[in-house]
Amino acid sequence: MNTATASSEHPSEPVAWWRVPHMWLVVGGPLVVVVAAIITAVIAVRGADPVLNKEDFERDLKAATAKLDGQAKVDALITLQPANQARNHAASPVVPKAP
Image (spheres, rainbow, N blue to C red):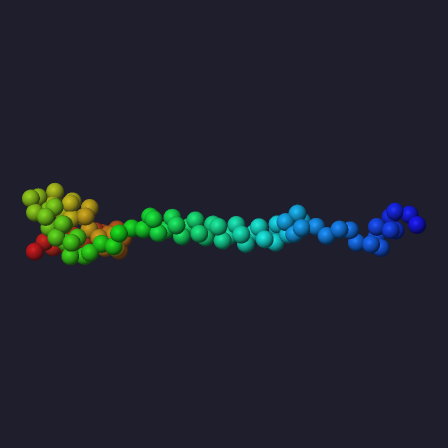
């Protein structure tokens, strides 16, 4: 009997799973995704923007514009208006009336 026939009749010694290259393709893909998700979550939690209070913003806006008059006050109000108001009125900014 030649060695080619003998090796095909008897399976070789088992190999540990971490030594099989195809197994790393099966395990590696999902493992990379899980690690990336954890890194993304850490970045999101550490870099979270603070929640702003509307009343505090309005108070700060009044204090910042109290000493200004005329066009300077209008320019300051346009600059300091809330983001959603600025976005909605980007083409024609509407300045809120000061009380």
